[in-house]
Image 1: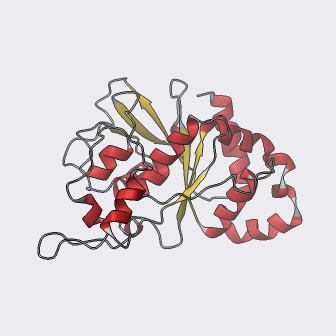
Image 2: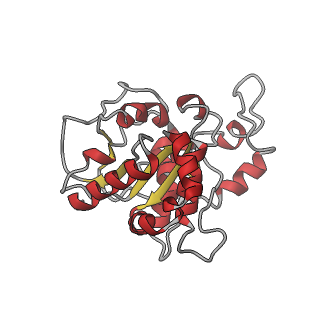
Image 3: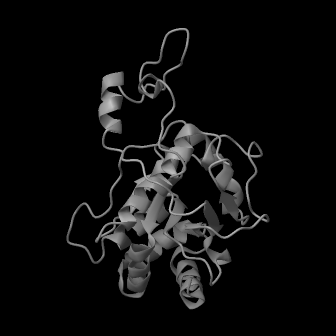
Length: 248
């Protein structure tokens, strides 16, 4: 990570978004470190709940054993299988055996949805989540994750489209909370034209974020182009100054 780029964004963020929460970054690495490694069974089963600590400034390093959720393992690239009877879990359940989340109408529909979700293998042994201001020169972020209120989200969304003609340059695919902040943006890093992801609509993950928050995850390449546009974008207009005061 270029430290000058890190600090430049922090200065611009404070200028245009005041004290809005800094984003997390995630990256994959084979580097060993016991200081921030999450031990199996030591944290909440849901990754989104765990990340509250990272958002407060505690770097967190996960491997496949650290994560207690089938979906978390899959969407972070540490497993390819899904939980047994997942098509029933996400839909109507199995009476007397499995409560369904009822996010999809039928098990058959879940199977069709999952046919579009190609599993991937993590490119390294660990995934690390760090708050942006704690990134070091040796770190190589794949994507940046904001937990944003509506005003901040509006700013990020508009900034992402500032240099774009494509009306769908930001997307919001169906998926779990962890898929919206890791799986989907990581898949976009493989694209020639990566798109940001609006997420955190997963009902099971909602209890672990503020009621006024959604996520906005941006592949690093796209994020740095957004940062370079900040000083000539709508962020310098009177219209944004009104919103900026409300953020403050």
